[in-house]
Length: 130
Image (cartoon, rainbow, N blue to C red):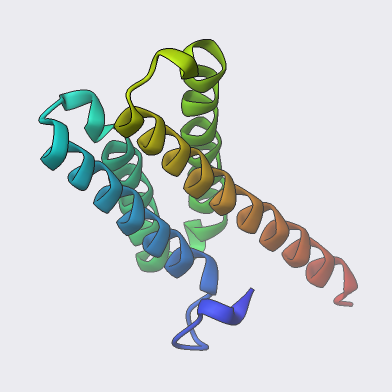
């Protein structure tokens, strides 16, 4: 998971989470700029939450594991919300709403997959140590 690591002293997942947070914020900001609808900001809200959690994880090393698990929960909710909306009423959505929901789903689910892989790798590395 070090493909996004800029500094080997800081684990990659908090930084990866920050990148995904910025992408979600940008998605929400662009959607809001186009539509002026407050619901278009939903990806930005998830991005802000993820960014705050990742920032805290970078600052507080002893709480990093717990904070990244909270970030995984936020990413899960960030994937489930648009998935539910798409399942219920995708056919009635505007192209912008459809795109925003798909973008939020892909970004949140992608981050969640990376986090789960990171958790599994950390668990294996921890159990392999004497």
